Image (cartoon, rainbow, N blue to C red):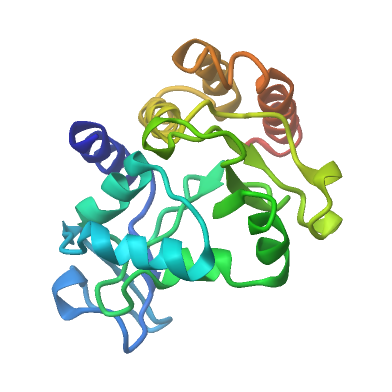
Length: 226
């Protein structure tokens, strides 16, 4: 997972401006430019120091299970943004350890989902609702499939999508590919590649979900030019 994680963040930093708004909680060692007049600055990755036991405490506190691959990905670096445009993943600020993960778990809809063994960990890029690990079936290393939950259903399972990625590792593989390809291709041209990268998730039950993204992005490009 280490190599895949490094490739992910290399692609992320090449695809998106690593900028965020300064707050007093930002570590000085993560600031790579001066804070501008609007409060924005460029941040840089630093090596992570969180240990697995700290994630286990979150599992115990919220009565959830996290995939081993997710923990390994999240603890490799500290980073202050992780919005890939089609999925937003929890950041890691060393001065606010694991705050972003906890926030995804500590709200009404999350509580309703957790009671049904669906564990929120990020957000869908079109603001439909949280990305969730589907923990209803036991798998090795908690390598759960990933679904999207429409928050407007307030915990009812009618708001749960089909599986869109077969695992967190496949999510990272697909997002890494998406970000690398953005340099030379339109977003709607890249997403169908997920079907081959993750044939048991994005390319199986996730086809309709990702095809809707393709149609939306293509429509935006034809109407607005982006």
